[in-house]
Image (cartoon, rainbow, N blue to C red; front, side, top):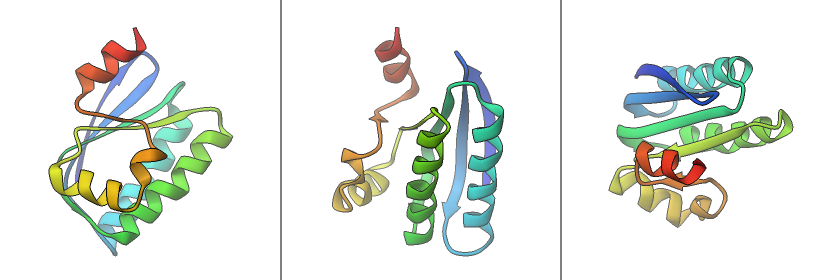
Length: 112
């Protein structure tokens, strides 16, 4: 998995590439969320546009970190989920728990 980062109004934007599944990629994903939980002022925006597969381990990391972000008073935002990832989020009803935006621009428009 590859992570490219940028910043938007106190949020760290993490654009991910590859897959998130049991093993090294899930650990790297968790380490990335932990790092930016500590470094961000407002929270983290996870851009899933280049992720076409996430397994239950990756979903578990997302859910676990959502609670950590809330405890810190920060947000964990999801943008650009592929059709496959969006269906998984809907099937698990996580689309009702996470703020999800079609793209980064729609998030930016919503916060202005």
